[in-house]
Image (spheres, rainbow, N blue to C red):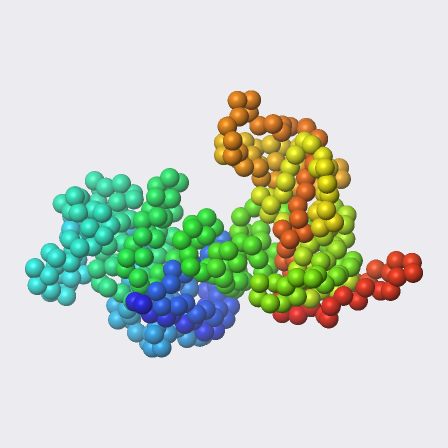
Length: 403
């Protein structure tokens, strides 16, 4: 495996009265495609610049392959950076832009020729070697910048919003190319972006940041399906997020893939009523929680379901707003007079007549308890009284781990 481990421990950085990073700690594995994801101002670019050596932290350490790099200037760290604005020399050809660092080190001409052509082939630009940057498209300029960074054979490649200046289709194409380059080179990539789809598409793991803190680190699947906080749930993809109180809990006769217990919790949600959701967290009646269900997990139909299982959440409502996007339609469905629930319906089959559900239609929506997810465990309220003649449902022991 090429590249270097990058270990960030308790890194803090303030700009005047503004705390950009709050004791951030991360372990980035050798050869990993790792993304720092978050909104503008969350601290992700500051962290990247500290790794690169362009900023110094107020506290903390940064090591590459076990070596403390904070005392080293940028040119002595085994890292290279690809910037959002390309930073190409406008008076030099593509070939000379890529060759620049080798020429500074006075490498032999035949070595320069061989290495530059190797990396131009890697980014599929060998036919454009003689052009100047102003003769290239945005995507081609970005590939020149990547080749120029890689020719130094860094242990870590830092990419600071490298695709944000490109249009949507070109951005998708460049993402695929970037992923392929990573697979071929095999070094550690650290990728900064505010675009959730970019991060989900190419990352081995993602760190979601906000206001200088790392809120969650995980695979794209873990970040999307099991968000650790309300912010992560809202920021990653589209979702329905509600607060509620645990009314009852029962342990199910099945195990989580990790081998732990699984519980069926019933939540009292002011906007919806009683909701059922499975969870591996230990919760008890009276616990305040927030839960999420993704729009694509919800089934929508004009026909009432013939059967309703005990683990299905079921509501009727009216289509408040349909948004047709060709391959899918997003519906905003109004239930209980004022609560809007987002629903996604994929269009898998051709339809002559257009979407079968339209504005103001009465619809039936449902989702399985397994498709909801308890995001945050919060405070305690008074537990609900037991049903007449029934013992109090004590549920499992008090929650732990994700407070």
